[in-house]
Image 1 (tube, rainbow, N blue to C red):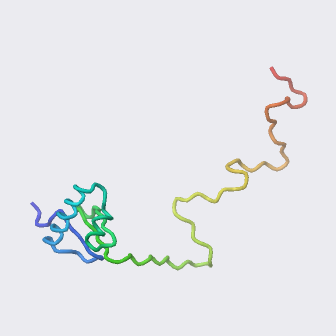
Image 2: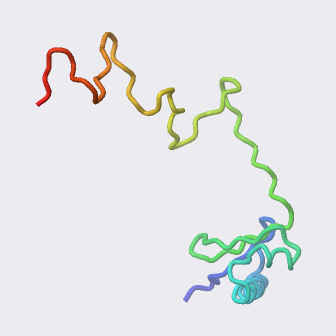
Image 3: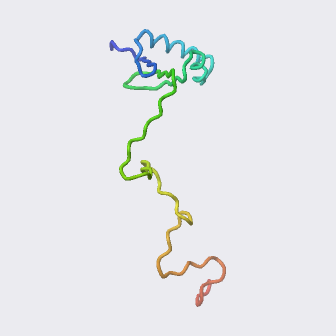
Length: 122
């Protein structure tokens, strides 16, 4: 058996001792049993801004914030004011939707109605 507990907790990024983490998890679990899904209520009752359970390095981790998280600063971009494309994002839609652009010197395909000149319907 491992010396390390399977429960961990941190407050504003500072890890709690095993005993403190277990006590916090016990209170959190008791609240969640009585108020299913009410993490915000637990945070509010205990003077926290947020409480988020997660899983990290094989341990259940309860992440507590007592202040608003500082906004993440975007990495500086070379080449101006245009935002960098997001990973796995699609290019901006073209006018006309997803239809391919017409080929040069081509006529549009006939739509329903009358057949093209010189051709009969069968």
